[in-house]
Amino acid sequence: MEAKVVWKGRMSFDGSSDSGFVVPLGTDPGVGGDNDGSRPMELIGIGLAGCTGMDVISILQKKKQKITGFEVQVHAEKASEHPRVFTGIEVEYIITGEDINRAAVERAVELSVTKYCPAQAMLSKAVPITHKITIR
Image (cartoon, rainbow, N blue to C red):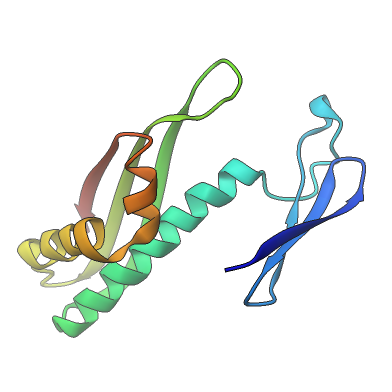
């Protein structure tokens, strides 16, 4: 994978990688930004949620679960001092559907965590990650 950012002025950048999609990056005015894009650490959280979310939904679809809604929330704590790294992460899987089998969801999450999601594998080497399953 190749990734890059191109400076647009002040504290604004456009990021892109192999897929060709452009992601605006920015920061808040308190540190010289224009509040015009995602923060880089936010993108790490979004990447984690997307990575594991794609695994879990794919597995649950193969298990013929009747899912009508699915969301992955990443709750990350950050250090108060620079560098403001993540100090703890909770990944919450919120599943809505008919007759959802909790064991199937637990297994799908386990497979994502232990086998499929490279974002979890990489981040778990640097920060503790816990998981929560909510079935509605």
